[in-house]
Length: 368
Image 1 (cartoon, rainbow, N blue to C red):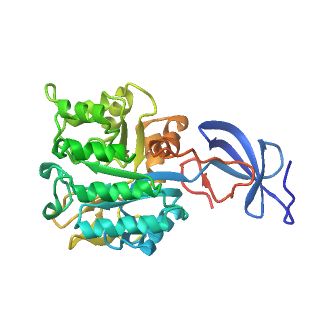
Image 2 (image 1 turned 30 degrees about the vertical axis):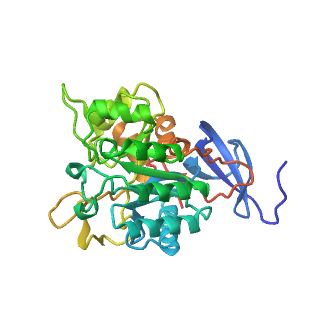
Image 3 (image 1 turned 60 degrees about the vertical axis):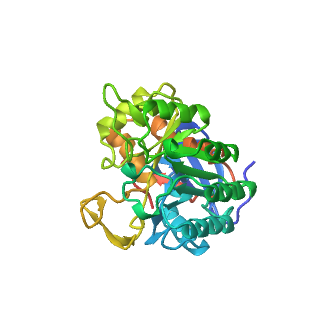
């Protein structure tokens, strides 16, 4: 039954419609007063043409956006600005990500996430660091690195007791086993990353309950014929793996290799690892250094990579256009799979939902 509307409905004709794990062809959306009032096979009536209609995307690793970094403004207002910047670009739900810093900064971000939890676009919190291998810290500040400690475990337990989804990235080979077990028992999604773990150490961590790997390939030893390391162990396992799909952090060829080599489908998802420049100005400050966009890359004063300048819609376009995935394989990597990692149901397009979802053209760019 179509809900009554005082405004004349408009029609959107979608060549493809993605919702709740299904890609449907040639669908028509009837819209009135900003909400979908009917979904049916495409008809002959005049309609706005779009290539793809899909729910807003989900991103589990968002360091910043709209000129704001989580670490720079770990407040409810700061997280809201970041979420709004990504929403304007087509990502409806994010895990704000606080990176290696003083304990007080990480705890402030946790308090802000608790205050925002349930608000539009804030799924919970991703704590990336500071419990890393110094050799694989990347752009994370060396002076703040420390082994996993009871302070972090207690913080995560408190967030989980409040029912909030939490992801935490650490180097498992440097974590005290009892503390690692406590993190896993809390129900947090514990990820291996920024790690020098051997393949044996990685497999032991997976067996213990480490269920995910953060930005596969990046900030970990690269595999060789005799030393697969965390990278090889992850690809050859059933754990979930995040990937930055910008062609800068990982080449298109290596993305294809990883996706083809996984033993089960649906075990990889895209993350932006976005910094403040996404939806914002072309530079920002991190640890007192100026970070800016240069030829599509985010670099620090030494020219080293310092995070990513991409959003989830860009990742989707790259997966289709450069990696060569069909839409039905690429779309779950920016929608349903990241939600499943956090134990969340897929977003759906259905009667009654707002039309302010994702409408894309044939180049997977936004449609007005």
